[in-house]
Length: 247
Image 1 (spheres, rainbow, N blue to C red):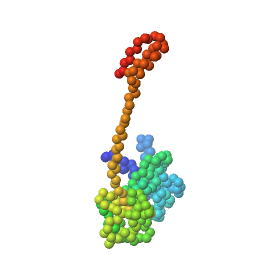
Image 2: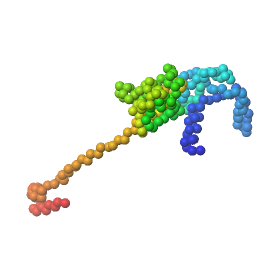
Image 3: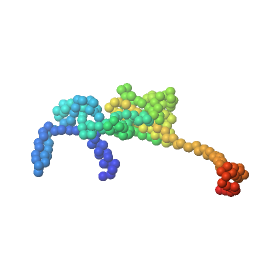
Image 4: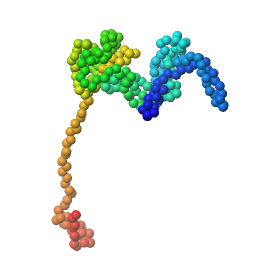
């Protein structure tokens, strides 16, 4: 088991909804209580919205197996209640998760579970049409959000486009994409949102300026030094001859 796999298992456990069973039989084994559960499993739920720190999912069909109603309670909501997960959008326009503990932010991470398609070359309108699908593009309930380097305002970046550019006959590049440009398509089927995030990679070339330093060593002429030292000696009446040495 690798470190990455262990971390993924822990994350899945934190986000997993809790379940309970209809029948609960407990027996004692060497003084320890052991539960032997029987019957059908039910999701643990609550009606308190402010306790939903990990997920706001609700049960949509409570009649199946006499399920409880309300918000599902995740492992992370019951046992580490200070842990919080919020859906957000990162600076590049991609759907993300922001984790925090005791109101202190841990980090923001891309929600790869919604990643639908990805390109690293020029992307045409037909490419996006084929990747997303006609049924979603033609569905008026879906909202399309296109960003280029996090910008979604066509007044700022005129290369932005709308759903009209995504059609099977458009074989021209969109969004000024090209080799090396990362284009990611995210699909949120629950909220019916399609995000197209176009990300350019830039190489910065630093400008180095060498400044010339002009230094002047503090110095004093030998004659001036000798004269000053002789004057001091005479005033003190202790030295009649002064030898001045310069390093």
